[in-house]
Image 1 (cartoon, rainbow, N blue to C red):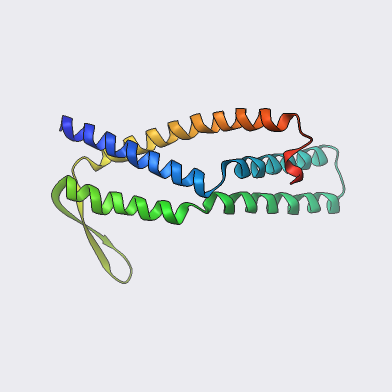
Image 2: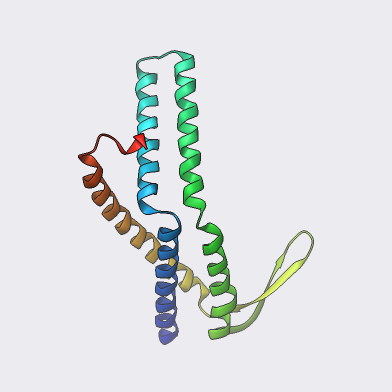
Length: 162
């Protein structure tokens, strides 16, 4: 079991590295930062308007702007999801069961049909490794990106004007 866990950790690290690389390439990191900044600006403007009890029409207009910014940000972030889904399914349901077969067959009952697939040994460890590594790397990269883009755009008027 010990060597299997090492292999699963290495495969999880490769999977995370590949996934994050694809995600960062497909959804441009700088554009993500700009969309986030725009959303934060609209949110703070809306909060300020509510504190000063602005008119209903003015608040509604700002809420529409905020909703548009949130939608743009979400759609931009989701661009890489189809690619990442295919990779994850291939790794979890095809590659790992062929490397670490468990001999058990799992069945998922759908409304119309059943899907059977072979599991693999210690699959819960793979999931834990992947989640922990992915969250850690995303947090580190997020902080580095924020520091980099904050310094880049701090001397310019506003990144949200684009």
